[in-house]
Length: 353
Length: 253
Image (cartoon, rainbow over all chains, first blue to last red; front, top):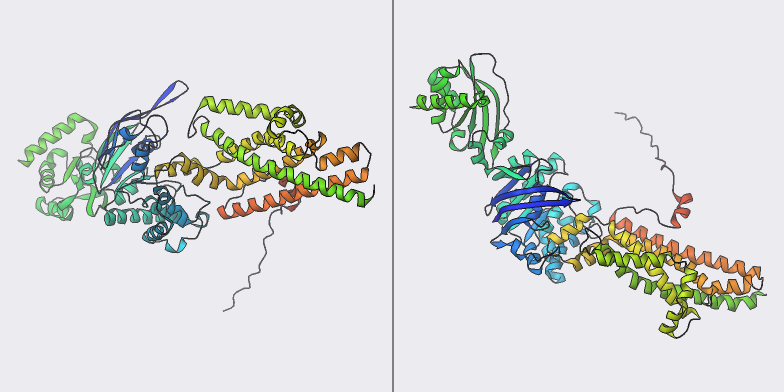
């Protein structure tokens, strides 16, 4: 639905060049919620603004719903008619809502419809319908200044939906909201994604946002995407930074001669009582050092850090057992040196056999 | 000079002043508003950045603003004669007043538009709006309160200029004050014209303030006081509002 290839943005100011985007390839499938996570300055805001060409990329292409937007854009800063047409089919929600304080809530939602050239009656009907959808039908005649942050963002979402978009871009839409309001706004985005089949690309610096609603995610650092994929894929990737941050597990081994293992659950395996099976089968005592379980996109996923008695060599068979159950198993501590990790890997392979 | 002699004189002079101020205001808005918008749009990083246009318009505006009005009006006499075939009377004064006030108002418009949150412009661009949409649906409505405040200041400046125009044959209260009050030493008449000017300025300022406050209340923000309002508000602004102390009766159960 949204594809960027080799997207590059270089800002020039006073002879200095700052590369905000450095060859970003992003692929968002139709109907999914895709989260781009990164710290401020990572370039994620530039990325989302390049998707509807509010920011002109220095190089690379952007394709939304099969339309190459970079080809539509006229030269110079002014947007061509074709680009404006395309933009009206892409909704955008902002961190600071960007509602016109001089217009009522209803008139704000009508604004994109005015641009589309709908007549007055049609606009009113559509606007009220959208306000109803976001649960603010009773606020139609209020001014934005009279609303709370969460309500303002709901108006922002209603306005973004006015052009019947297939794609919704969310630029830190929950970053100015408190946790509870954030949850309700994310819930609304999730509902819209399901009900309307809306493809959502959102950028955020909050891990919770990704955890709550994203099907896929990407991690951005220094203008590049360092990891991307569906949440399940990321969890299955050994050493994935996103997976580690999504499900942080901590805990130090309680003494020497202990093996610490990080187990990642997803899919079928998450529903099996693997730990107690392991304990019974091999008659070993397992202590849980840390665990994080959650429902991501309707599936139970999580990570757990467990401690097995004895050194690593003695635990090859139990670890093999866990692997057989379809779990992702990483031996902690082994990550410190790759040689050790490779050795561990080889041993586990043998053990499994 | 008796009141019956003064009365028709003042009556006509008042009408002339109002005529000059009204028409020059109309033309100033028609000329200054687009010019201010042009200055805003063409500035660096604006919607239609164009260094040449911006610098050229900016230079003309600055030059026009630095010429004292009394000199401008004299300098413009040939031009005025070209436009309306005369250089005397209120109609002639309107030409000079308008040309003097357009650059002033254009700068105020530019400043007002700069105060509009850039995020709003971006939001409208993201929904497919072009430059005209941005101007008419975002910039002007959002800056309206500030524009009205700027217009109030401009009208008051025009009242002052119109009195200067009176000194060189423009008619109006300024001419009465110069011809009768100064040259014929009619101090009573002079004082009355001053009182009338103060009344006109006050009425304009109050009307402007009222509309600004109405517009601002709707949008839920408080613009900074502009021009004379600062003087007036000095004694109107309440100090820290007294919070009413309500005694809470101890609950008895």
